Length: 139
Image (cartoon, one colour):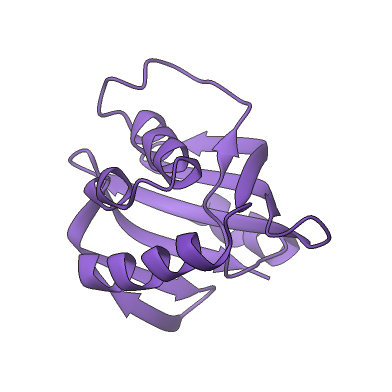
């Protein structure tokens, strides 16, 4: 966590931060933190809400960094991301950079929202027991 406190103030945040990675690290069939986050990213780009939400713990919590509460649980995910997937059919993301530290995965992402709108985003995922339990978005 000490490393995160040093890095986070320098990172940019967007509230949209789930994307496809061009960076492949390890076997995504396992429940390592990076494999879980990568499955989440792949399901996001496939607009597969069930596979996407399956990568999260039932009690997952979302924040804008450092502590602005956004929502909790799979119902929050399903409602918000189903709408997002429906309203933005070109939604797609590329992982620009990935940092893995223990059970934490930090992704710097470039999100394509529409043909003319792109967003740079950073998401910090904390993974426990093969599920994402906490997500922080930076701006």
